[in-house]
Length: 79
Image (cartoon, rainbow, N blue to C red; front, side):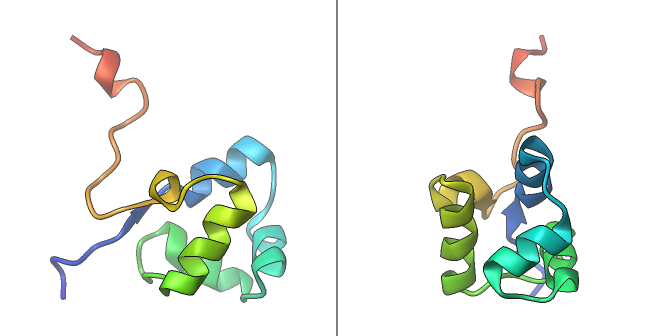
């Protein structure tokens, strides 16, 4: 169902912390390609995996995932 996209900030959180897809995958117990699929929005995580990702980054799940696109960084300051 194309109208049920899940948006995420996984790549941004990984970059902020300087960890690779493989390192995140190992920490979560998933294949590193799964992290890539998640980041590109090609795969929506289970609730369990979404919670594990948020827990790994020590943030609320809403910081990582959303049903609406996240605003571009700096977009709220424009204008």
